[in-house]
Image (cartoon, rainbow, N blue to C red; front, side):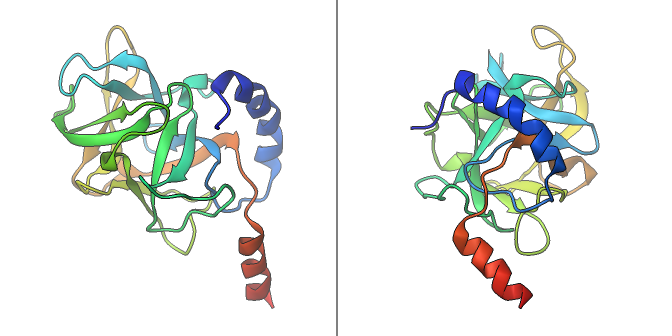
Length: 214
């Protein structure tokens, strides 16, 4: 069973300093991270506020505050697949991002987003279980998704890229930016790992790296 948010927050706070000093390594399954949209300088965020149009599911936004506890996401394997804790995520691998505070997965579908009219991105499911529309492919260069890399997330079923283009909400989520799916690749699609707790890479990965250096 995965630890709830109140139990994880003290660990997250204690880990941030150490994580910042660590050498950049691969992002691993089981890690809990904040993701920054590089162009618009907002972190991927969710909360128990539903869209007033479209699907009516839980909204996903971008926030500028670095210390907001509702911006943590757990990295998991794709739907119906197991990605063991500590397994490095490969470029081209499909994953789920589960919102730590509500247990719902980053999700997209063919509804229009409320502000820009692009494809809606929501949070969906219960206790980390949703459906195949929760799967996102990590688009990066090299073999693994590395913490310092700017990467894109492409929706596995509809091919849109997770994006921010600057549209801003009013009440009840005043000042937050719309997050949506875009059909084309652009600078609005790039994300970078920021704060979080990073599961140590598995022994198998460490041995692979050791033999590659010989």
